[in-house]
Length: 120
Image (tube, rainbow, N blue to C red; front, top):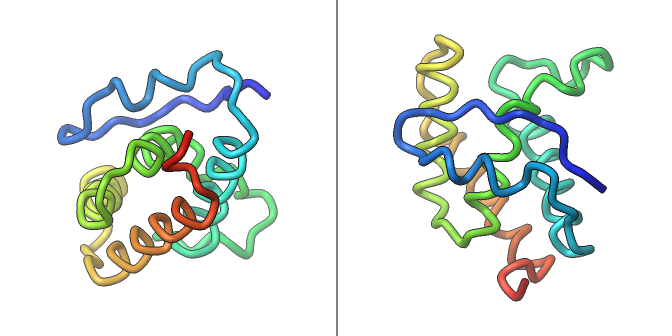
């Protein structure tokens, strides 16, 4: 499966996180982690509240490669949470929700551990 999403980088995350996926095939574990990150962003993080709208399933695809890269590369939950917060505040103009961002980031780290993506 080829990843076709384009990433939306923020100032504190190097663009190299977003380019590693373009055109590469993912292993079974990487694909499972990628899908988990997608689901968590859409259904749990969901800063603009579109999880219940079928037409908005791709709303956060622009951030997916960057967040996936951070999770796969073993970044700590706090760093991932900071990125999510930056996206929501600077990219979407929303109020900060650091507590939720950290909860989401911890969920992402738990998925990484459950899938065993650290071992890829």
